[in-house]
Structure formats: structure tokens, C-alpha cells
Amino acid sequence: MEGCPLLRMAFFYFYLYLMSKLIAGLIFMGLSCTSVKSQISYLDRPDLLDRVENCLDLTYGFYFTEAKQQQLFLSNLTPDHPAPLFLDALIIYWKHYPLTPEKKESEQFIGLMEKCVQMAEAYMENDHTYLEGVFFDLFGRAFQAMFWADNGKPFKVVSDLGPMYQNTKKGFQLKEELVEFYFSTGLYNYYIEAYPEARPVYKPLVSFMQEGDKKLGLEQLEYAIKNSVYLKVESQLFMTIVQLNYEENLSSALHYIARLQHKYPRNTYYKSLLLTILLHQNNYAEARKILVSVNAGEGDYSAMVKTMGKAFLSEKFINNDLQAKKGYLETLEMADSFGPIADIYKAIAYMGLSRISEREEMDHQAKKYARMASNHTVYSFILNE
Image (cartoon, rainbow, N blue to C red; front, side, top):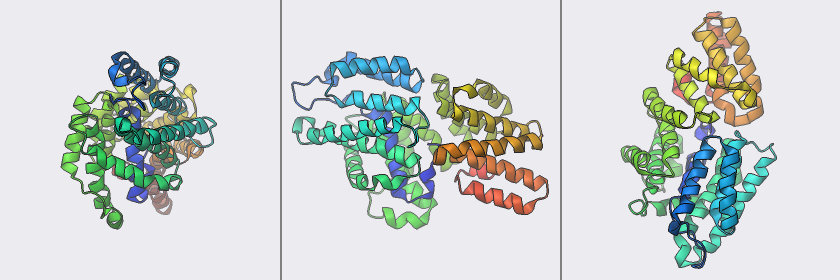
């Protein structure tokens, strides 16, 4: 997730990565979830939809025991329904974030998504459940794509590109009926134009795909933020990423991520992204408050984030290059265990080392570190710091 590692790859893979973020909520937007008419429909059961929404909130908020209780209730009541599988996978993803292939939980995660795709095939064969089948087919594939893309292995899901693209296009016609589709449509409209504009070499790869509209895409994302229920979180997260990467507007990005972190203060990823923005805005007072709340004892990922933050403040706020250099080198060492997911922290560390080397009049070393930073991120706010 961090640093959008697929930004250095072909648009197809980047698009896969982006669309995968629909998973956290779109599948629960209130569609009729029945493979046959005798099955329980979530649409007809507001009580079940409330539990789904509660489970999502608990998951994003890192209350995994409570989230699992909600998921188990739904699974026991509707064992043949895909929704509990998605919820279970989402809990696994966040509980073990960052989820890497080396972790045993990754097999559970992939297995749940594969089962969802299998279930969706039967749904698509029935007129009564066709729409739902389209969604579960898309999202079962996309969730797997997210995992492999985050871990630098997008070729694992090349075969899923065609079905995902076709099912995404179908969502364009459904957004007026289901407001949650404004998120997927907005993402597509924006990125299908923004990505090849920023990297013209990829224009031939998207020339045969449906055209987009960046301005409209932003409007649709904003509409999803204000009006969607289950995609509100993902809409705000991706608006943050858009503002950071393409619009290059740190203040706007801060607005969206701060709202997420305020609602889900225990979420490690939201906290780390907020900290990163505050540091690069030179808002050290607020950054220090966030850094204090990062508990290094929660795991290696939190420890890495805390080490990076301390190093940045040592360099920029305390003016202690020796301490900062030590922290940046430790950050690089810790980030190695997470692979591409931690690329953004490697880039921050390399840029810090580059600045320190420049002050030490080690120009060759400074340029080397700067190149290494650019190899790990395209975020200009990091590379131009």
C-alpha cells in the first residue's frame, strides 16, 4: 500500500492495485446476496447489514476480536453467503498488516478470495443473482491482486486483468442506482488519464480502454466520500493518495487522512501516512504528537515507522545529523523485511541520508542516495524535500 509500488510498472498493474481497494466496502453496499431465491438476502435484512457495517468499522479500527465476533455471527447464519468470507479476509489483512507472502496467514487470505471467485461464477449464471456475481467475481480477483501487487508480484494475477476490466466497466451503468459505484467509476476516470499522462510510455497500453476524465473522476470520488456508506473510508484514502501523487497537494491530502486517523486512531497504516505528511509539511509539533502515539511494541512495522519519524525529527527539528543518520540506516534495515510495501520508508530514509551527505560535502554519495530514493517512490514531496 505504501508508496504505491506499482507506479513504476505498466498501467495495467497499477490499475489492478487501485481497483483492489474497493474490497473493503463495495461488496457490502446493499446488493441482494442470494444465489437462489430461497437464500437469505442481506438486502432484505437491515439487521445483517448493520452487523456488516459494524464489522467493517471494527476492522478498520483494529478491534479484531470484536470484528471476528460479528463475522462469525454472519458466517453461522449465512454459511453459503460470500460476505462473511470477504469480512474474514479483511480482518486477516488488517490484523497482520503488512501481510506478506512469508506469513502463514497469507495462504488463508488467498484461499478465502479464491473461494469467493468460485462462488461468484455460479451467481453469474443466474439472472436473479447476475449483478451480485459480477461484483464478487471482480472483488475476489481484486483482493488477490492487491495482495500480490503490494508485495511486488503483479504477474501473479495477469490472467485476472480482462475479467476485472470488463466488470469494472459494467459499474459505470450502475452508479445512479447504487451510489457506491461512484467510487469505482471515479477511480477509473481519474487514473486511466492521470497515469499515462505522467508516464507517456504507457499510453499505448491504455489506448484501447475506455477513456476517462480526471476532473469528473475527482468529483465522483468526492461524491462517494459524502454519500457512500461502505466505501466512505476507501474513498477518503484514495483521495489522499491522488492528492499526494498526482495533484501534489499536501494540504488537501492531510485533510482526508486526518479525518480517517481521527475516526480510526489505532489503524497503523492511517497513522503512518498522516505522520509522513505532517513531517514533510514541516508541521513538527503535530508530527511529534502522532509519533508519541506510535507504539513500537505493537510489531516490527510500527517500530520501523517510529524509527523513521524519530530520524526525520532528529534531522529537521533537532538538527542532529549523527542521530538522524543512525535512525535512517536502521529504518532501511527494518524495511527490508517488508519488501515493496515499505518502499516509501526506504525512500524517506534514502533522501534523509542524501541531504546529510550533501551537508557533509559528499556529493557523490548524496547523488547515489537520491537515486536510490527515486527507485523506491515517485512521490515528489519526498524526493524534493
